Image 1 (tube, one colour):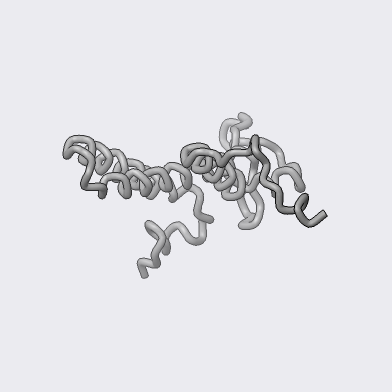
Image 2: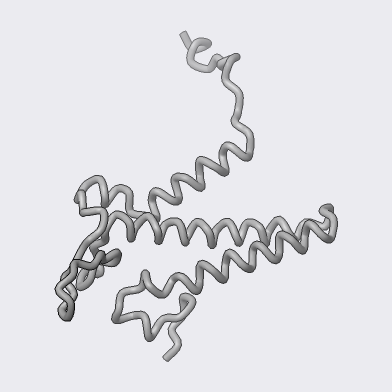
Length: 142
């Protein structure tokens, strides 16, 4: 019986590094975007409000007044921005390998810096309105 417990499966092989990275990236996106919150609470995909001057109904992407709440679109877009920043950091890491040609390394640096900057610039709308003026790029300014 003991020999059965420790038998190796002959048909099982380890996944490649790319497959593991893709699975980790997708799971990171789902966790950061609030997928579990969206499944449990079932918030609306997008909100709406009435314009006080024209009376027209306008779409609202960010849930006002609640720090712990979100619309589905808000969570998915913020998760996408975090994934962009993460991919940028991975590209910067790939640029540090000396075995790659210089032009490829410079391309990785340019793309990595661009993705990290896009993520930092786009972080503003996702911060609660009270914190937008005191937090910039993840650190307290005043």
